[in-house]
Image (cartoon, rainbow over all chains, first blue to last red; front, side, top):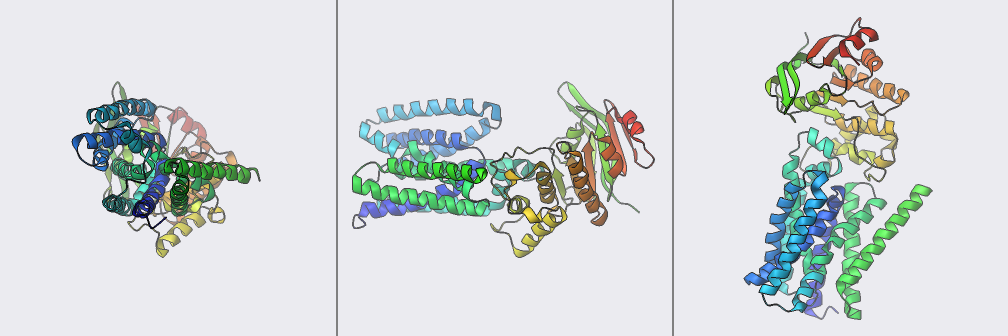
Length: 265
Length: 230
């Protein structure tokens, strides 16, 4: 399997993606942003289509769209009461834009399928380098912001009264999520990115109870999903995103079962 | 001689169509245990938000000594939206309030967390997920987090309102101990006049358009009722 260059690239890129999604996911879950992540993946689809339309890479288009829209959505969603409605509106608009740009760029429907559902075959060495650099930036910013981000994510009231600059933290975090969405779309596709950004972290919080351990376990769940998913996709010739989704769902439902058992005992 | 920690002078706060205070004046000295009493809607929470810098006064001033920046404030709210599935252990929750840039806590910072947990009697249950803790244990964990950075001012914002009687006194005994042994200034917002009378040494009674500030010595519960309308 590793004699094939595209599989080596897929495993390398997949490893970076699992690490940043596992890390960012812990804070996405703590901040109740799962729904927003879903929307960002749809915005990513529109961005990728826009990138192709402009003759750029899909990743560049995705980065521009997701970063700008995450800041806009973040500002619109300050009031919890209107969060879901505003995210739905933005989401609908961007899916429409994605379809428009794809149509304008005269790409075939198979290209749309690869943006939406991901593709292992298309990953070149240059893509791996882009993914590695973006992942490195996301992780470095996360390390620098770790304590304030942890405080604001797990105790928003405490963080606000202690004088932390919580609005700035929210904006920076949304930009990090947007970058992670764009990076992760390279393998799992824009429709299923939210799986890697939410399920590993959501499962981890039922097993361990400190932020650092949650990050560790969440990365492990994401890595197992990506590595095993790539392997199963290789041997069965079925879509990798299906296997990743199925494996992460197994982790999540196992975690729910574990929680039920431990509360009952 | 007691030094002032906060001086509030001619403070007025007004929201659109809703003047909360017109001319509020009081001083909190270092080491004071001041209770703020008054009916719902009279502006107790607005006052706290103003002291924390979260609401801008319409006019007047709030001066911290030596400065707002140099004054560490601990805050214990009445309620946090933490359900049964809240995942962090009590120890991790208390450590959230430790400032710094390293991703991990240093040995000295671990000692700070341990001290705060010892003082508030949650050290024995430090590995328990906070979501699974009882109401009293949660409030003690909130108190531990509030004092972990050794604040000069501790604000209790109706922090005893959701507790049963025994737990209320247990929590306030801990706070009184901190006030007396560590000289932490306490600002206690409450409706509970017997608690206010037992623990506070000064009171600020708020009524619409009126205020009364004084020493608690010699005040009966009936007199507190009269000045606060509670």
